[in-house]
Image (cartoon, rainbow, N blue to C red; front, top):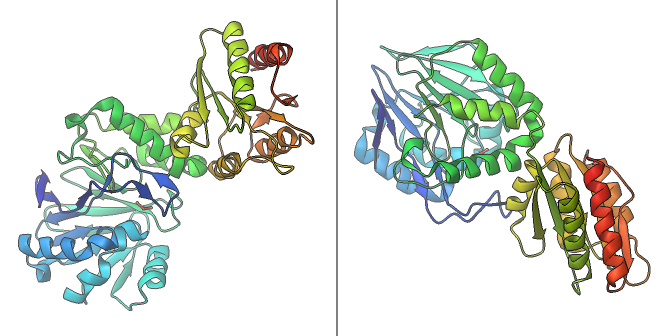
Length: 395
Ligand code: FEO
């Protein structure tokens, strides 16, 4: 169903209440998501972005009920990952000659995905498209988070269509940020940033600074996922400036795996030691084999220090910890301190190997970690507590 946004701008996207995993199985989406597509009805009619491919027929058939497709003068594709471009083939079957405005990389990606010779018009930063009363201005935003990404700004209504930037995987019928629980919303926005945009933080900072220098009046930020930032839209821009700048709170996250509870006992004793040295720090412990990895990574993103624990298994570390370390390497957390711990039965390589991976992931490893043989006894646990005390002092 078409929903009015502001002036002559309408939402024509798809709310996906069922989505629990995104990017294949890479990202959990506990609150569903939406694929936001927008229709501008000025003297010219423009469609901004489409929806994910499984909803292509539904999208086009609903759009047909709301508007004469042949009246769409232009299609703007801000980013062409399949969750936004997936309905293009279905749409272009109906209006094959309609120009598609996108970046040069965008054209390459659409061609690479759909192998069609559509009517592409490539644009660069500062290019404009007059619609009658108002004008669209294109702003390239490469690697936020794909090379093709751009933002599109609509004058007059003062709307920034930001695609994935400022988005959240958050299904809602009510569309606007002032209609949802603000803590839930900020958590989902942070999870989105930590798990998708953080590797590109230096580019995010630069792009936002460029955007602010343009001094554009912005009444609404319309991302391609989740709610529209209507009440105080600058709040998410300010938050992005913080998140992109080696963000951290006074938190330490301990993530571990355990086979027979020994590494868990070590984790808890280390936590005791940290707490005794610094009662002000927020401590969070997760068994990474059981917890949602994207939620744990979000906790890590806003921590100042991380402790990773694994028993030694087959001369290495556990499968769950391996997955976590691989994800940490890709997410490029900045300015966080770290150490490793774990129990072992004979060879005990895990702690050294984890420390190496933490270093590779760009963390500052502050000590050589702690290993304990078999089930820790009271002396071993006292050592772990002492390790925790020293770790807190090393921060
Ligand atoms: Fe929402 Fe990068 O696609």
